[in-house]
Length: 451
Image (cartoon, rainbow, N blue to C red; front, side):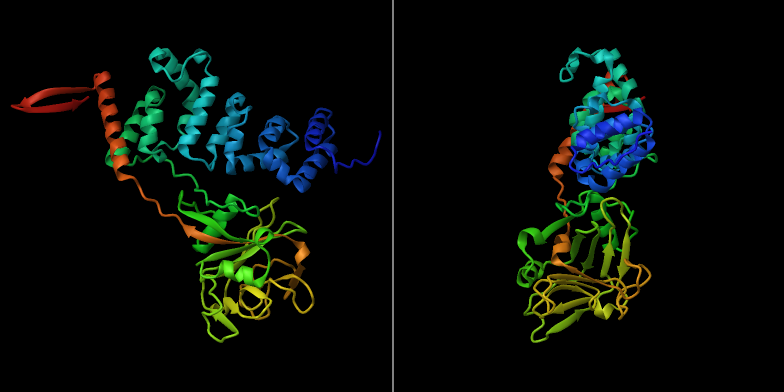
């Protein structure tokens, strides 16, 4: 038996992935485990950027469960890169069905389009057919596509698709859908009738352009700010994070930070620690005021019961810890001291923007403060009253984001027009199937009957 030391640092990730496949074929379990751990520990960003390639490589490797689970997680949260990949149309039905069953973060009409694209490829009877010229399709063509897509139909939330998209994109292919489903969708859009078997809406996306947090982190923070459980579904297109300051781009001076954050309303402070990738931060529901707001006071505490500090673990896990304020009178500190930029509690979480008395560009995070301003039942470090004083060089990124509610304005005229078009198509459909007939019920009155 040969032994040795394997150092993967500096090796191309694609070559390492090939090595993983060979190790699985040769049943070298220790090497398979080692390579998976290496990817997970040091190459998370590469895995995320190449999730489709990795997924298609490891999905059939029984020994690679860890990478499989991580790829599934990435695809659930960011499905479009995977669905747009060249490999997607050739994906096996069982694997695609497993993905569709999950709560993918995707618009429903987009999911339908991807399923339709996949279904065309996997329906041999449609080879060479023009999908834009349905006049050349016969009943057997529609039936073949219906059989291909049938396992997926019950997992698509058709009632979350706008009347316009349903009318324009789906209605021409209504024959591939169950008849009762078409009737229920039309009834929903035309009369507001909601069927009992309607699937709950997908979890909404909290829009953000952060390089620190992912969509799932943003959803957790919104729920915490609303005092809800962290896994509560977020309505679609309702919240977004607006970046107002990024340390690596905008600088770390007190004046710059205070200027960027003043009078912005509720904000989140988010910091990523370079040493271990841990994400920490705080929520200020009051917002920060400008220096003139408090007159001659050098220090002022904002009162609120809604503030909290938190940790979201790192990108390799999501160990969620929230510590809400316990002393509402010391929730948010506003200060004119030259080196203090942002503060939660009385030294519970501080961002210092200039050199302090020790000559360090520092972030101060107290997980269990002596003054008990924040809850002590959830600690980020083992030692009680432990203070973390991190020099600037240990920060990977620092940013402040404003949480905003997105107001939607519906285009009533367009919606009414689309609903009318759906009604017209429905009437034509009923007439073509012989289920709708007209007759004279009395003089100058025409009645309709649906069988």
